[in-house]
Image 1 (cartoon, helix red, strand yellow):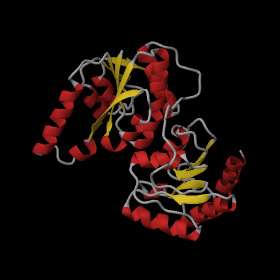
Image 2 (tube, helix red, strand yellow; image 1 turned 90 degrees about the horizontal axis):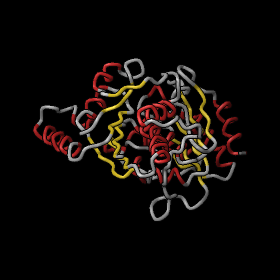
Image 3 (cartoon, rainbow, N blue to C red; image 1 turned 45 degrees about the vertical axis):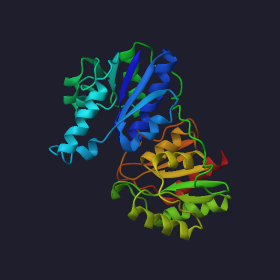
Length: 318
């Protein structure tokens, strides 16, 4: 069987879909699994040894200039690549109109959620095969259930196997002592947690013999990371690409982060991970992974510093 998974963004959503690959290959070890994803997140499915090929796209860039000649050429090239050889199934795990339309560009039957299950009900009109999946489940479980429904196997009752293989920091950048990772930046200011609380977390990690490594991804985020690191005797890496960031996360003894893609990636890599939620309920997209994980906070529920420190202590003792 040749399967194309369509899960293009965002980073956390891509991470949550990874167990599907492990489930499919457990059901059919001879299957060939390919993945259509935004280029900036391509390194994530590439970390799963069961993904034979990753097909990158740049929809976030293209949508800003759909009429430009370069955009039209790039979209034609991607469409040609998707139609080069037939797929036995094209599985849209995203359930959005944009993902459904790109799934239809591939050669093969397109499967996805039914109208009552898709994040955008209109997307279901693009699917030849549809399945109902409850909306009140964690994103990981929804993906696993949809794949099982369309590929004809029972939903596994095992823990999700994210399948990631990332080497801890070696020849590249990385502290030479035991370290923990802090992820204090997010795409929206509503997700942010007070800076002074991050400093307190960093100091607690220092007390436990771990160097706080504060991650960042944009210039304005670097400034915040440097302030926090300076106040808790931490370290700040240079700019790291997604694959390099995965290597740093893989070597961490502990990770504390906001509801962002890298926090979800850390948990999927099996690191003890504490997720801080300030603008979103963790129930449907909480921190999930094979290690010690926990989520705290919720919509309009900024977690108290002492509550976070208490959970951190539990994970460190574990």
